Amino acid sequence: AALRLARRLRILAYPQKQGDDGEPVASPGAEKGKVGGVSTKKVFGLLHEMASAFWEKCSDQNGAPLALKTFLCAGESALLSGLGAIGEEFLTKAFEVYEESISESQAQYNALALITAALQHVRLGLEKDSLEALLHKATSCSSSLLKKRDQCLAVLRASHLFWQDDVTDPRVVELEAAVASASADQKAEYEGRSVPPITMHATKDGERVMQCLKRALKSAKAAEQQLAGRGGSSSDLYLAALQEYMYFYGKGVSTVNASDVTALVELVAGEENITASARERTFAHIKNLQASGEAAERWAAVAVP
Image (cartoon, rainbow, N blue to C red; front, top):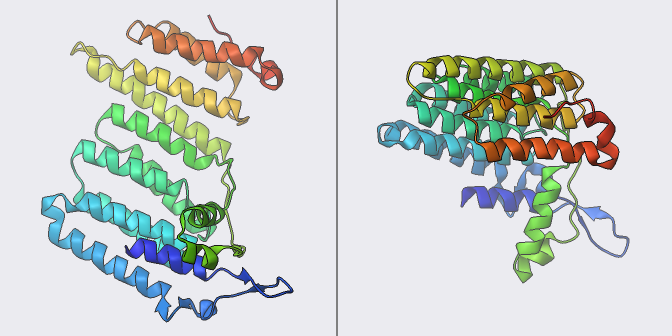
């Protein structure tokens, strides 16, 4: 409910075109961070108190994951509201919950999936150094998971933190969705509003992407060695890595070369434990790209059996 209220206050604070001249006019009190006498900062202060109390009192009853989710959601919402310092505090708190109260392997893996997903969306309102610190933290935690299999998959996921193609302002998407789902009264309040400008960081760091991909492959090999003596297999990790290499190669990341993709294609082709249908679908996708218009020339350099 508090997050919904924060969204409503955020939208009502956007300037709205009114009058015959159509000039934007801010909602009453919006310049002070308030609408209708309710402070947006106060809402986030309440959220912080609630999440902290739940973490403290219910950590022995699996309350930590819920507290982590609350901190992440509140952090994203605060950044959308233009409250960079508050948003950063929430996200930092989420990492504290992860490090201090989540110790079981699967729970850690699941928590990092939530953290990474949240960080993929927080491209506005944060200082560049603050964003970099959070991304580094997520990558470091991913590569420190106990199980090598989890390490591989988490680091592959983290690689996407360093290559952002979509620079759409999420507030615009949120506003459009709010108008579409609003009641008649709310729709009149929401329509005609426009989001104010805010700093956005679209990260495109090919070196960091490649570091993550190489680290994931290293973890995949370690996982294979761990399972070798127990009759298990981690060959599917190589297929997962190939699919990520394909993604970044297709996006034109300069550090990911055709030779890298070809080498993984050859590795996957020789792995008997990979499901044949999954392997063939991946190879067929490459062949389709080689036959398509704009992408054909680039993908022609990748050798597929």
